[in-house]
Image (cartoon, rainbow, N blue to C red; front, top):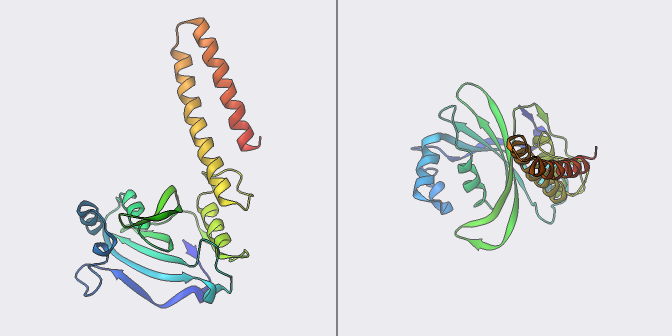
Length: 226
């Protein structure tokens, strides 16, 4: 599913949560999650374990202005269903940048990474806000290219979210996310206008909607670089 350089693998996976395992069962309690979220995480997740660390020691790549360490967390699931919003709640409270490997009981694996931005201060145990979530079931071989861990993180987000992102050639990940969010918003507006235009009985109103629709299509085309 994901291939990482062997030097980033821990000699032994570090289990941070497993029911009934001494010292690990309180992991969720330390993150100021709501009682409901803690209960749901325990109901859906059988084990959380850190398998790889991507940092200056394992890659010889300098830390970035944002990213000091990337942590690969394997999430062993108890069923084929997962409320992925729970991982958002978890990730907002982690002080590092994780890459989640979701391991389903049927043998499937899925990569999940959040694009998150740091808050100016801690709020109810949260250090970040999640801007976008990206998932992929494609094979991914990670090569560490970049001048800092910020760029390594950016490459991971782009690789995992490649189906949902535009302007991926830009080195500025924030710009890529903003353009992709703008595209998603415009496409939603265009779809809504198209539906209204087809249902409109007034010829004059339909023409006004058509003009607005075409304008949105031009904006979408410009963002896509077509």
